[in-house]
Length: 91
Image 1 (cartoon, rainbow, N blue to C red):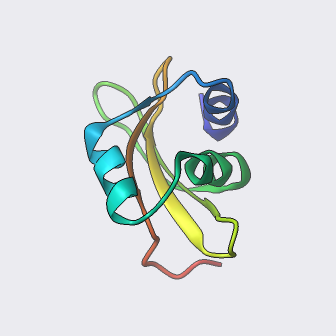
Image 2: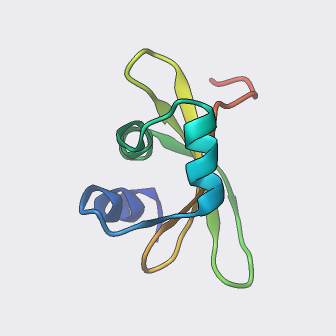
């Protein structure tokens, strides 16, 4: 599918968040709206295939100029796997 398809589904509320992603959001003081914005306005920085579907690492901006890295499993109902601050250099 890809980032645009995932972004449409997330904007419509059609997604899942794993317990791990939720715990990481709480620990890092990241709100679900920031995750939405990062996916909608971000870009795919990594993609890898797994037997149950591809995963995308999407980096997008937060409200304060920082960036978030969101890993999403690209499924019919997208699943947010984890959320963090990117540690690699951004172009």
